[in-house]
Length: 508
Image 1 (tube, helix red, strand yellow):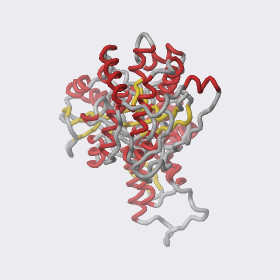
Image 2 (tube, helix red, strand yellow):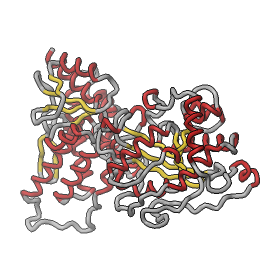
Image 3 (tube, helix red, strand yellow):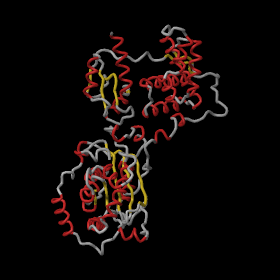
Image 4 (spheres, helix red, strand yellow):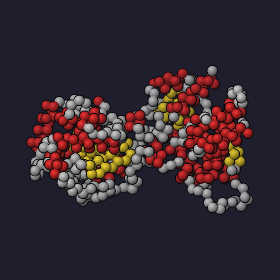
């Protein structure tokens, strides 16, 4: 619920008790209630557990285009790229907590969603582009999601916000599914009736003793909202709102499309949980298959050289993004490189960096090589690069020790011979620099620094663009996709700041 508690997204925040009560009275007058209203408090007090058929992702509910009424509630929360689907904002994470009529949690489900665009305020929702790159798009998620919602009362904290995005995404997916506002309950609006003070989700939970972990994660907020709903059901079990919403939900007929492949849920941290990206490469064969001559051929030399140059470009900002990993793995497979060979190339690359760093340090320490080596062994930048390469601290120590004996070398010794490292990347006066994403500094502040360095801030990526600076180097924005297509380097803010400092020092 990244923006859900924000004043601009709280459409119902200014609604008066008089207007709301009048609207509810009109709803009550227009709905025919089928049978007696359920009493959640009595059910809970009696200890009787209502038998409910679980609606799992992919499970059919009734016939196609129809639903079997399911007792209870579907508590929903979304994390989005911004405030308005009309402005192109999309869903980036969705969670559903199923709750029975007595307020007991039955099941929960969540997944990241690939929004096919920039993630917006990542400092708020904390979703990484590397993770959503692995996630299904909303049209893939929709069948499982609709089966969870079908037949239940939809509940959300600031339901107007969540249902607005749901309608937009469902419509975008080409699915005919109506979300009846009468079959929805907003725990934020209900807070004005049952609580005092702030209506923000965290404040409401604190007021009634509901744990709210995982703030601004869809599942964390959905769990908290489900707890808040349970409190409302306890203190106002006889409130007619529950029966009105239940009757409306019973009358909704959902279109339930068939489950689609590629819709498996992806959770936060998925890119890290998969281990290092080198794990995707095959292990070496037990018996190598030598070439007829016993030496690598011209194609192998070309392929190793291409891999190392891709690696050099990727490490411009000391971070190998998801797109860069994909390109490196594709090149390694194309060249027939197994994991052991690639790890050897990575160690050679790290050694070349260490030797270049030692040359840069030459004469800057009072006691020579010994202190230079000690400084380099503890260099966080070298350790950072090693981690990106799938290497560890022992590899750093080993390469530094080896570098002390060889000093300046500007090549990586691959299996096919020496491959020259790319000259240091330097920005020159007039270079066009493009920014993308919700950054740690304002766009205006970065553009001032760009101009002060003699560079040109540019609004979009072209083939002339020298550099794209991204809030997240795995960004899915149009600018980032275009930059990758044109071969324009994509770097982090921190890397750009370092490049500006180097460019400024050289200009001075």
